[in-house]
Structure formats: C-alpha cells, structure tokens
Amino acid sequence: MKKAKISASIIGGDMCRLADELKKIEQGGADMVHLDVMDGNFVDNITFGPDTVRGLRSCSKMFFDVHLMIYRVYDYVERFKKAGADRLTFQIEATEYVDDTIKFIKTCGMQVGLAISPETNPELLLPHLAKVDQVIVMTVHPGFAGQKFMDEMVDRIEFLSMMKKNHSELKFEISVDGGIHLENAKLCREKGADILVSASALFDKNRPMKEIIQLMRGDK
Image (cartoon, rainbow, N blue to C red):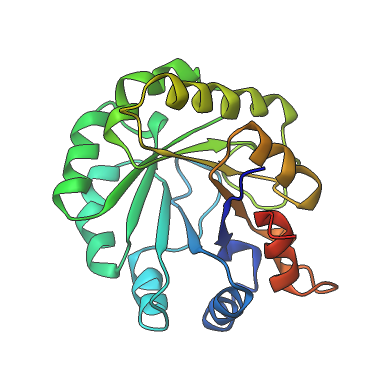
C-alpha cells in the first residue's frame, strides 16, 4: 500500500505555545506544517494571520502549507508569501476568480492548492486540476478542529485518484483534511490520498507524536 505524507496542523496544539508545538512537529518527523488561517467571515472562527506565520517561519525551515479559509484571498497572497508560506491553498468557494488567484499565487513564487468543502460539488474542481499542486478534500466542515470524519467524503478521494490515473497530465497531490486519526488514515491511503492533514490526533498526550505519524504515514 502507498505511504502518505503527514501534514501536521498546528491548530491541534497549544495555541499559547506555538513555537514549542512547531518544535514537536519537527521532532515528530512530520513532512510539513499545516497552518489554518480563518477570518471569522468565511468560517465562524478566527485563528491567526501573516504575522504569526512570519514568527513561526523564523523558528523553522519546514515546508509551510498555509490553508486560507478567508474571503479576499487575492489581497493576502503577497502578505503570506512575505511571511514565509511555501504553498498557499484557498477554498474554491471563497472567490469567483479562481483562475486569476491561482495565477497570482504562482507568480508570487509559491505552490498553489485548492480546497473544497463537503457541501460543494466536486465537479467544480475539474477546470482547475491541471493548474494546481494540491487539492484538499475537506472531510469535515471548515472552521474547527476536532470534528468527526465524514465517511461519505472518501468517494471524493477515489474520484480525484481516478482522474489522475486517467489523465497523466494531472500532477496534483490529493490531501485529506478533517478528523484524520489512526483508524481512518489507512482507508484514506487506500483510496489514493497523498497527504494526510491531522490536528488533534497528532497531539495525543498519551502517545508519542513520532509513533502516531509513522502509523498514519504507513511506515509501520
């Protein structure tokens, strides 16, 4: 069975000690850091912005995958580039100008990803698949960590995997975000997931993060 990269969502840690949590993620062997940016408008929650990303970048050279759950995506592209984002992923529902936003992110020298919410028709992704580096399948409703994994979203992983198999020009990675834990990580990998985003499950105080990451990735 294929292995998956593990993207550790720092929102699952102690928000008062983000630098320490970032160190845990590095020592735990995660492949990248997932940073959820929420504005209180697109989703009913507020997390952090470019200044926090900049501060964390000063502490780490890890790959930063910044997931924007905000409106006015275009206005923030350059700010997150300067803050140290390596990839900028935005919600397809957040703007009418999806192609223009993709082009601008690439122009700024970052990888680009699209995320899709559970209630959104996945066919809306089709015109953009050849232009992005990542597609995030949201398996919870965006906004809060700790939600239950929506089993019916597994079909979307399989759908995107089949698209890649049938169209060799498609090079995007399939990322799965929301409610990922040890019990469903294997299923997501089986269906074609390349990246697993995990928050709460990685910061389990009763089990070493390194062990959880290895199990989720498929090392063990």
